[in-house]
Amino acid sequence: MTTSEQPTAVSAPGKVLLAGGYLVLNRKYNGIVIGTSARFYTIIYSGKNGFGEITVHSPQFNDGEWNYRVTESLGDSFSCELEPINPEKRNSFVEIAIKYSLSIILYRINKHKFQAIFAKGLDIYIIGNNDFYSQREQLKKRNLPLTSSSLKSLEPFCKVHCNVNEVHKTGLGSSAALITSLVAALFVHFEVTSNQIDDRRLIHNVAQFCHCLAQGKVGSGFDVSAAVWGSHIYKRFSPSVLEDVMNQKVNLLALNNIVDPASNKWDNQATNFSLPPEFTLLLADIDAGSHTPSMVGRVLKWRKENADQANILWDTLAFHNTAISNDLKELNKNYQQNKELYNIAIKVCENVKASEWILYGLQNPNNTNIALFSSIFITFQKIRGLLREMSELSQVPIEPPKQTKLLDACNDIPGVIMAGVPGAGGYDAIFCIGIGDAFNTRIEKLWNSWEEMSVGPLLSKESSKGYMIEQISEVSGLSKYLNRETLPVKLFKNKL
Ligand SMILES: Nc1ncnc2c1ncn2[C@@H]1O[C@H](COP(=O)(O)OP(=O)(O)O)[C@@H](O)[C@H]1O
Ligand SMILES: C[C@@](O)(CCOP(=O)(O)OP(=O)(O)O)CC(=O)O
Image (cartoon, rainbow, N blue to C red):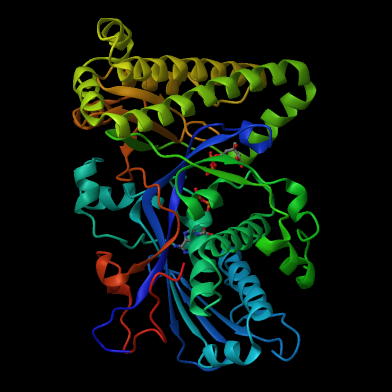
């Protein structure tokens, strides 16, 4: 290993569920999942404390350090018991990811190779992009306005000046991205390699299991799927896949069989999808609370008590969600076939309100892209109307009036094609998608002047890349926490 080589990190993206909230809990329906440019990083070094000793550093948080010791003898059995050195200070996401990744790794590689790589223990760093955590307090302390330029003035991966369980999250799926990057980094560190596709499916299966166990529930799993594959059209895995291992004493033989891609137990689907060229995603964190699990519980209770009415509503929503994804895919295809015509359509529409695009479509019948832009806008308005109907019927504030008012104001901005509440909805976030580049400034001006709620922009855009190896030297701001006298035991070159 030459000193010129830089250590590497495994990073995973956050998530935004553009369409399919609640429906995506049922395998009958798909979700439009967007991976974010906000990424979570895991860097693993050979430890300094000896065999079986693991230290996890989360340097952005005041209490961000956890120490573990692998207690089970690593004889013929492949179970790794992780003993927290400080039992009062635990992080279930970190602990479960390490415990089960090491157990599965030990099952899959030669024990002597495992022990050689683990000889000095592990020193693990987990670090999240600023967008995962509300930066309102940091900006307030610096007397900075809640704007994207203020956010850009913060150092990358800045400290959050609180404990982990006190952080105000922005809903980009930090735990899913954390677990996926940590699991992937451990599998890379221990060189558990097979062909690329199985690697990614194996990491997905392990990360989904760990995330569900850490959360204590089996959601749709779209957040882990986003962390693994980036943007895609998502169909959930059958909850029964994990039913035999979602209990306190996990049977490791069963677990290894379940996570093994060769067992073909997983029926999740991640179909290629990304936003078309010149489509920009803007996200806002709204200083208001929403509790997704209770919202989900109440919506599903209503659905169970009103099955016929709910099925019609779900099926109608699904029809429009599919229409949106098909139109977006069609635009991607059109761009590949005729970039010039596509870019003309962008220029015609980017400075016009979407409600007027239908007229431009009729005036330019040869440029079907304009009609598709208009169709996406009109269809997403129908989706919002159906989500408001779901809100009314279930008495759950999915798109409450305050959000409707803000989203309608966004739609009046030229170039905005979709403005909605992501995932479960509620009061805490919105997204806007616009065409061209003029709408960014207009939208931020609207958000900065909005008086009814505090609407804080995030910097994240779409990223259709899933987890991946990155050179730390190419990730600005990451190395400041990695004051290490030695480089990692080995350097990984795109093993994933
Ligand atoms: N940098 C970090 N270090 C350690 N744990 C973290 C970190 N970021 C997030 N977490 C864990 O993930 C939890 C938040 O996950 P989640 O509820 O999925 O939030 P969200 O999806 O809104 O980001 C935190 O309570 C914490 O336990
Ligand atoms: C309701 C859902 O279908 C989508 C929830 O999406 P969010 O993005 O709102 O999730 P949180 O980050 O947990 O708030 C539940 C699910 O799919 O698990």
